[in-house]
Length: 230
Image (cartoon, rainbow, N blue to C red; front, side, top):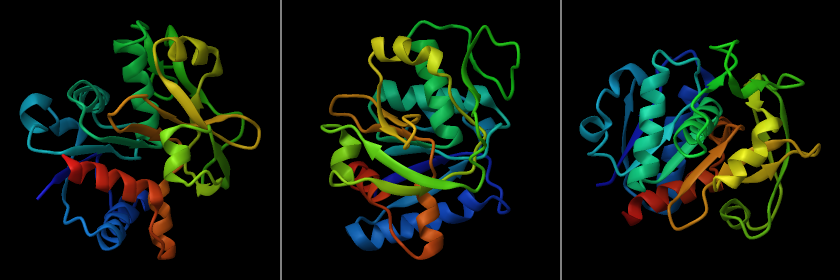
């Protein structure tokens, strides 16, 4: 049975942490994939080559600032370098971008403004307007993996965040190979992916929240199918 690591500091008071197991149950019902999952705290990642080796996929979940930013970044890097299916939502999206900026784009000082206000390269900075408990429409770049997952249609998604991509670093990240493929009505970045056969996606929105309405989500179902493919 394939196993999924949920990387995050589980808190039953966090809406996303309540929603994720429900969303995975919906995905199991809709895809027929019998998937097991386990929470791993960011401070429990340790050596990812040992801790994460038994898992077929990784989801870095919302809930930052994490107890261990280094643990979260190590999990992202493990997934990216080992071609394990990866999904990062909200805080996971933000930290996946920091890992990519540091380890691929050469921005050694890439950091998160929430935890380091003096970062030399603040890749993640405050949004112009808070998205805490907000929702909005998103469109995807034609030809992207996300565009295909959503059948070429726009989507309406929920958020719980105050931080996003610093647009000053967009060109540098794209030049290093990252593709920003999801945008809101104002053209602000809401999702990214790495091109190629590996499933490596991040969304600032929280697709897991659909489960709280009793609805499955196409992105999570696509993620589960990819994990099952091995």
